[in-house]
Image 1: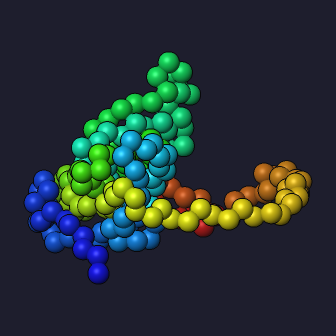
Image 2: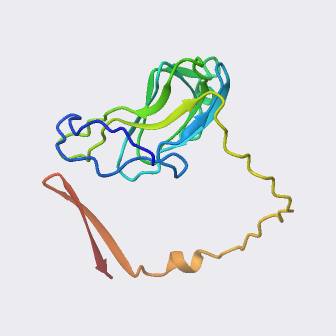
Length: 187
């Protein structure tokens, strides 16, 4: 049985108990094999709808190469990477980084730090996501798929009919007392 180390509910103003935990590739606190000094490319996706990750590697730094699929070099070719102590990944966010394996004698974990989302936000406590171990077995490499892909078929659609017709309904967006409202109205 794997154990998740989550900080007690004291992150910012939250008082709720931790009810949800993050998994890594569907596993609860897996062991990631990485040898000392080995450099690995990691693509991290925060697939949650409302929880933030503030990623940190024990005794290591993250060398970020892309955020949300956009290489840092695209904006500044002289600085294709950014070395950080920790990195915030919002819901539905992606981070691509180079990770260097820690010393063999060091215990290292990938963790998320506490993220204070305010009084109306959901709890985002600190927790250990995965452990890094030298010599641990790496997941098997995916087998190549040998198939021929046909070019996509595109169907031409004449939009003039739709553009000249009356709408079935309209949507009206308004704001009241800090809340956004919408109303669907039949035409």
